[in-house]
Image 1 (cartoon, rainbow, N blue to C red):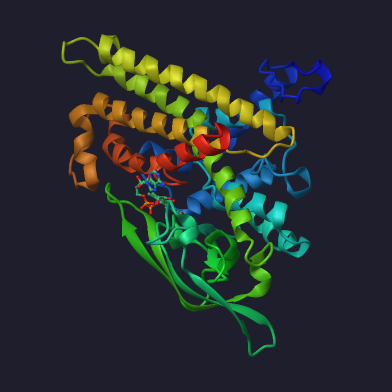
Image 2 (image 1 turned 45 degrees about the vertical axis):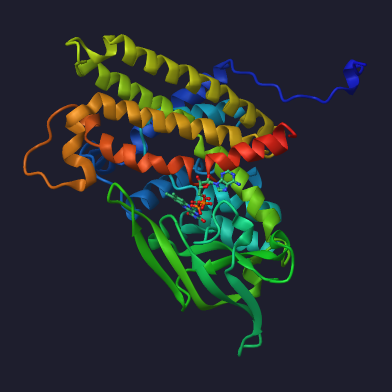
Length: 414
Ligand SMILES: Cc1cc2nc3c(=O)[nH]c(=O)nc-3n(C[C@H](O)[C@H](O)[C@H](O)COP(=O)(O)OP(=O)(O)OC[C@H]3O[C@@H](n4cnc5c(N)ncnc54)[C@H](O)[C@@H]3O)c2cc1C
């Protein structure tokens, strides 16, 4: 029997019409991005160079000074209090202006854990420094034997009394795939504090100063020749007990909450829209096998159209999540849908870009040296590297196969 109207659970309402205020905000955001993004960084980008840590921190600080670096945080800690539509406009405008993306580790992954589970002292100590990019954070979850099956992690943390009368954890183990740990001042780590408990019950969430004695970071070079990920070795690292977030052995609760934020952030809809436009531009200048312009090739057009349709569908799913977040619902297991579809689209975009770039992409493959100015369309230069690098997106943040398992269990109830 259908429930009476008033008993039905309320759904979050999504209003996508831009009001006069939204349009004014859009104009303000567009103006700000055009004026504030440093010229030398734009030139670097135009030359196809990678951004350094200093570049990223500089842009982060400019956004922080404007008060716009952490729109999703609660306003008491520096959030903007924007409506879902304004947040949507902001991410659209950033992608449109093609400004560099701030890494998510502190701002979008650790911060929600801190303001949800941290003590007042921990919030006071770490949130302002994350906001202002005073600390660079990395994520120490995965281990050589613990990726998809994260709860089997072995890095051990034992309580010891320090000579100074304070209590510490003595941490020993190895983390792997730790993104940009070479830049990190701090890391959030999952460690085993009770080896006898059930796997998920014996884990704690620790904040570790990466300059502590016993922390070693070793590079892993990826397929396209980049240094993005690392092994991190922890050898008798002393971590004060007050650096633990939430209860001892209850770290899995924080770990799961963080992963849901990580997954919804991976979708990257606005950037994919921007990349689709770039791809369309390249297809206009490149020729197809049949001699005409690639954009007029029926097969290529069909692939572009299919991508655009999927991207539009994903955009609406993301907007529903945003609307839910603003009415107090955290991103739930549905964030797995965003992760799967978003990363598949990113990969398909790089596949089509490589197809469009053809041999113009080749000299830059694996950073091969070249003594002549590049020929061909500008966006072809990075196409091979982007193609290889983007293979990672269906693996990190929990592989897409694992996301399908989560949807089957938590969303479909199978
Ligand atoms: C570029 C990059 C950056 C990363 N950055 C970080 C980081 O900063 N910090 C961090 O902690 N980790 C990071 N990771 C690690 C990432 O989270 C793991 O790689 C991921 O969780 C998969 O684990 P694994 O590599 O051990 O693969 P495995 O778990 O060994 O899986 C191997 C394959 O088996 C499949 N599989 C495994 N179990 C199942 C199952 N139950 N059902 C169906 N299929 C299954 C997987 O989908 C995968 O295809 C990064 C990874 C990459 C590639």
